[in-house]
View 1 (cartoon, chains in turn green, cyan):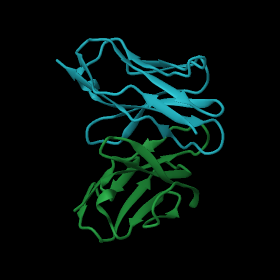
View 2 (cartoon, rainbow over the protein chains, first blue to last red; view 1 turned 180 degrees about the horizontal axis):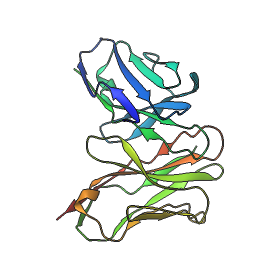
View 3 (tube, rainbow over the protein chains, first blue to last red; view 1 turned 180 degrees about the vertical axis):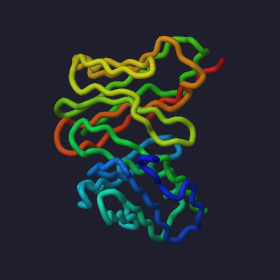
Length: 113
Length: 113
């Protein structure tokens, strides 16, 4: 019944590794997002997809590559992980129209050692 | 660019105290305004929203009024409970295009018995 689900919940890995985070929504929304939350709780948009098309790509290193196989899924792949990538990554979805609230997953806490 | 400014926390209150968390915004055009709440270890949940000037959003005893003249959207609750302890985020989205949220930095609320 979970509306927006992310896996894994926790991810601990070493510098230089490549990892992926998966996200799925069952709300029938057209738009999905990735947000990054740093240690001070600040939230910043990374990417947004609408119907599998990339519509927002903020200033994010190209080591981060989102992929949307269909409009219910938005995965995030990260290459050559760095210490500074440690954060909580949130997936979200919305109907995509103006004023539509976002529905968030519970986050993936990534720790790079 | 668009931005949201919230009062810094933590805000520490005793149970049944009155709560105000200040939020002001800067936006090109007329945004919709939101309050989200993040409980420990969870994702963000929509608490309330207002889409035009003078609208009042309310939910679970929380209220906020969209004040265009002061560009503010302060969150209030008459009597807080321990279970209200969480991080509160003020956010905006523009009323055109895709609904990407711009968040404030969050305000932690700690309520003691």
